[in-house]
Amino acid sequence: MPSDPEEKALVRRLDRRILPIACLLYLFAYLDRSNLGNARLQGLPGDVLGGDPTGKKFDWIVSVFYFSYIVCQIPAVVISKLFPPRVWIACAAVGWGVASTLMASAYTFGSLVVCRLFIGIFEAGFGPAIPLYFLASLRWPIGLASLQFAGAFGGVLAFGIQHIDSSVSNWRILFLVEGLPPIILGIATLFLLPDRPESTTFFNERERKIALNRMNRATRGDVGATVNREHIYLAFKDWRIYVGGVIYFGLNSALASISAFLPTIIATFGHTNAIAQLLTVPPYATAAVVLIAFSRASDIRQSRGPFMATACSITGAGYLILLLAKHNVHALYFATFCITSGTYTTIGLTIAWFAHNLGSETKKATGIPMFMAIGQCGSILGSHIFPKSEGPSYTYAFLLAPTQMENARKDALYGKVDPNASVDTRELADKAPTFRYVP
Image (tube, rainbow, N blue to C red):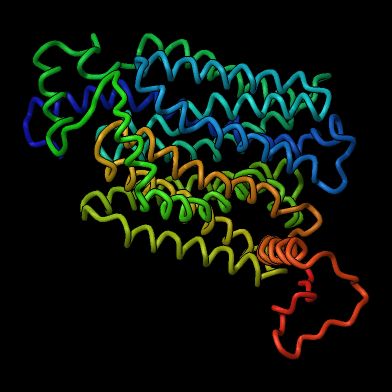
């Protein structure tokens, strides 16, 4: 924490300018990424997907976002160092806002897929770039807490739109209402967000000197509109980034599934679609409070690992309840609180951890999207593990993915098997070449 009165005053001034804009951008980025879960309960599958009785088309619309998001993250964030942050972030916000708004005009599966692909492209230039923009570890989780508020706000908004009596489908109104604000925010960002300390007009010369001293206090590296190629190679050779990606993979499997399917999961408890939208609010609001509390505590202790482990345990407990308490609606609803609180908290701490452990800006600009890209592959998995036919217990989500992956591996090695043939398991048990798991 800054001790100099001038520095404290400068940090407060920056907070007042940056945090509201960043939090609003994060809020609408998350809404535009995850509003399909609400749109599903407002009739989108029936209007565009031919009813989608299996839910597979909807799952692909959810997951296609992550394909472009993953591919574009590393080049987008490295290139972002060559542009003023306000210009880069403004263009990203306007881009995903336009793509999200155009979803309201979709009449085919293909048009929804194209819009989702472009949302992924533009959000890839925003999400991983933001950790580079925050100077203190607490400010990043506070920005990320807006994601949970987005979930809560999205539930309230969807509940209100559900009750609009209009010739236009409710889900189309939802996309319009949630797609237009990022366009306006992007334009505002161009004029309101400060650039880097060495070039922004937001500072006078005294404030610029204080800000640069603050940036370089702990480490000195490449800053500003430069890219150090050697540090890009260092990022690709750093084993910690790949381990972080594996951790992030598991977290994003949980995040993508809960953000896309929470309204559907709650609806399977026996509630109407409108009430299910409203009941998504408390889990997200609780998650925001837990994230900020854990972030504050970890900042004071200057330790991330123990807090991440605790938050992960909360998530695990939630999934265990979801698996075992099949007919207890109250327990299942409590499980959604555990899953959202634990998952979002661990993700916030993980990103803050890496944002401060990679040294130079170029290595951060490469390493952060690297482990995020690896982790976002988990989002593709998470988009498919809560099919509507499995509610409310969703045993599929816990068992099917690993068994199908192992079956596919054996098929590739030994070929397809006759499902009616006898299998000799005396020697190798379930590892026998002709043994296949039942999903």
